[in-house]
Length: 325
Image (cartoon, rainbow, N blue to C red; front, side, top):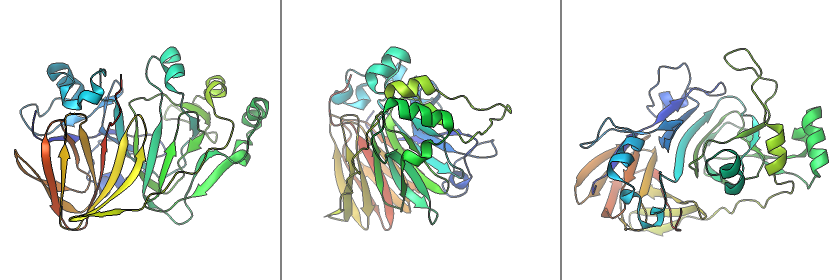
């Protein structure tokens, strides 16, 4: 495949979600709310749908099973699936306080990779905040006691957020997205979450949502983590590029287009483009493709040179720059 693959996200209607993804980003769902849209997903709990090309209508898992993993690049030669999962998240209410395991624990206990992730804040209501690790080191005994006594928030690091900020969340970090935050999440391809505290909320079945205390006690980092580095944008012809995060699982930049920017997709990794604002034209050797806010596009490894032309267009580009598998 040497042409862009446009994808339709898989929507999730979790109880804390709102409707901004439907109203502002054009996401479609029969549910009353859209909490998440899985824009690049190849997971048993959801797989993005191809909307262009000869394979339109297939999901990404079906496409991979038919065509193999070559489109992911040589850095993913050992992978059996797309190694990253990219979401848009609309938190109308607070999410549960939760933690994700690392690869070793998750593979042993859950049969899938762990979950290191990052959040790019797209919008935030005044005073909106998230929990991001601990505000001091604690013992495992104190951690367990605070869970039991429902005083966990007293030792969490609460951070008010602003649009454009980046938060990197290694596996083992307690965290929660707060009400009023709209963000993009780039993560390992995993859906393993250990819920620690959920404000006593009940699911659609009227029952308290399950907690995963023992597993959380096993995997949580009980020391504070360092603040995420916020890198400045660097000018390029036709716009700017700002590094968001680079780790062994993914590398992501945010690109601002004010003319025409030029890049190349080599054979080492695919690139995924997630459009956040505006309209533009994506140009490759195979043709020109209009893009708009909310679009999700997979550029297969080896696609070669491409450009994005527009004004006021902003997108996140993600790939894998270390060998996985």
